[in-house]
Amino acid sequence: MLNVSTDFKKSVYSTIRQFNGRITFNVPNILNSALYGDDRIVRFSIVEEVSVLSDQIPSNELQLTMHNSDGIFNFLNFANMQSILASKPTIKVELGLVINNPDGSFKNEEWLPMGIFNLDSWKSDVGAQTVTLTGYDYFTMLSNTDFQPASFNTLYDLAVAVFTNAGITKYNIDNSLKTSSPKVLTDSYNSRSLLQWIGIASQSAVYQDRYGYINIKPFPTLQSSNMMTTYSTSQNALMGYTTVDKTVSEINDDMGTRHLALANMYTMPEVTLEKSIYQLSVKIYDGSQDGIQKVYTNANIGGQNGISFTIDNPLINDVKTADVVAAWYLTESNYNAIHKANWRQNPCLESTDIVLAEDGIPVNNQKGTSASRQTRIYKQEFQYEGYLGGVTESRGGI
Image 1 (spheres, rainbow, N blue to C red):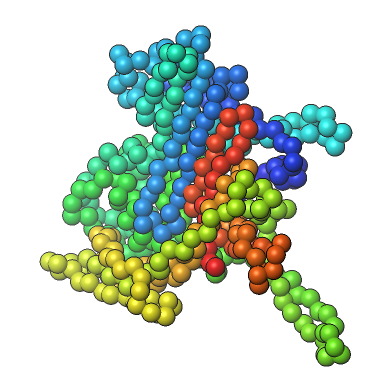
Image 2 (cartoon, rainbow, N blue to C red; image 1 turned 120 degrees about the horizontal axis):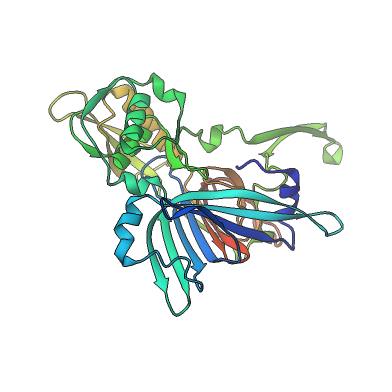
């Protein structure tokens, strides 16, 4: 979760709230970090997605429509498209929540980063006098960047080499990757796939944050996360029985900002259950010609009906790594309830954040009740058009 003020937390779910937008558009040799606000922005949509298991590396996407009645963006044309895209233009997006004093007078705007995107394409609408820009994060570019065979002492060293080869200087790599065993690459691979394999071998998520940094970082499972606050209470039991001591645990929801409540949703949330992993086969590149396969069974699902697949990762070269990766996958796959909320959105929440998602399902069939489940956000859509809304998808237990 982004660091925000107490005033932001008090105001973000207010009945009446106002968000403003601004973007910084930088095109080398043409536009030098030009700043545009709501007088230029028509609308934008951002998709932010993370896979904690690194079974894929999604690329965050921006769709931005701008007014162009004065022709300021006419330099975006077919004649110079290739030279402009080759210069790697960037679009920085921000949202600002208007903070008011108790008497309703204006206090200030608190601005939050929504992402930094590389311009990938554009479309001009002459009739509407607008231009629509499409941008992605670094991972789209990394799909087209090859990495040659080499040997490395640790996964940390390999990750640094991948970023250096791609010309990326903004990255954060967890120190746990420094303790891994030596790795050898005998073939060339595209950099995006290689980062995915690094993520799996180190039990880490690979993602780009709102500030434009690529992160390789492990996340604890929901079960072992440290987002829980424990309260011990005592009360007299009913009907003359002895005193009962009980412990109540709930998520530390940061003044309610981590709570996806029905009151802030446009429609009832969708809750679906994915199949768990029943069996997992991991290929171990132990130096032999064909490697070896080791099969793992999920004992927690109480049956044989589930997903079965193989992890084929050239960076898994010993049984110890295979065992840890398999245990990680099987544990995380047990949190397979998908919560999808179409709601007012909160831009301080990031993918990977742990939140309480209200599911709208009555507790013990009692009308007017609803349960809140601890879940981890893995995908968000932010839709801005002078006002903010969107969709949050999170994964957790049932």
